[in-house]
Image (tube, rainbow, N blue to C red; front, top):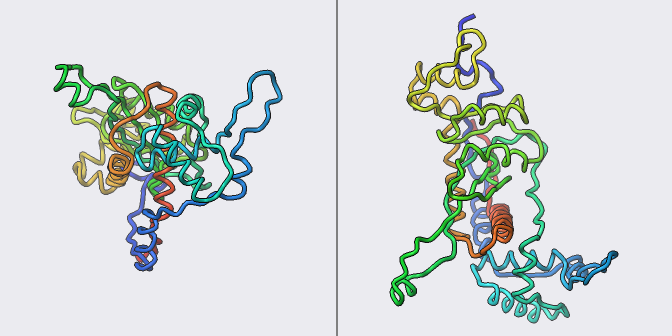
Length: 321
């Protein structure tokens, strides 16, 4: 039987056209993203103070709920820790609540080991879109350069994001050193995702055998949609048992790069690039924390913030074709 590109239907992502059903509700949802309405539920008030310890040692004054709330406000408004302490105190005072306010030292210390819940997702297999970007670290500013002639280059770290193509939500994130290559983060990102994966889409940096192996080891039925490099050649078994990469090469040979992108669904990867842009515009292009543990917490909370904003302002679509 002659080989045909994309002959397995489960590897194909059908094109769909959608339209927004109610523009007035969509417009109201977008305005709601900027709402400054703040309220504390009864459950949050009761869980504000830490539970008594059952083992030896000092008892913390604040629960993870209190620390997460403060750090979330910090991420949304791009505040320093002392400013965050003042904002939380103002909100609690305006609401007339009798709650203690975590000081900036406590926020910094607890952020090192804070466990942020993973993003929740549905039971349906997710079409995963992966991309990475750089985040600057705190370092010498322009004033220091001007006054003291400092020429130390600012450091930066690499942020890896995995988003759901259907919902736009960030389902996994990882922070690595700037020298880490993108393909090596495939396994750690997949380990952070609960549930099945239908497809894994990434750019040409993921055109590696270990990337295909990592996906196949965790999700054997998942399609890997990665553009082969221009110098790529088929595998030794392409004529008998072709791999997914061989299928991509055959499709490119028959239809060209643009035709392969349309038929494979690779063009949907632009959605994760939009999420990276949204991160830079809403959260910022840098990290405010200094240590690895605090930076990991900062990234996890920022991802949760963007998911909440997306839930508030996401329109409802109806398929028309």
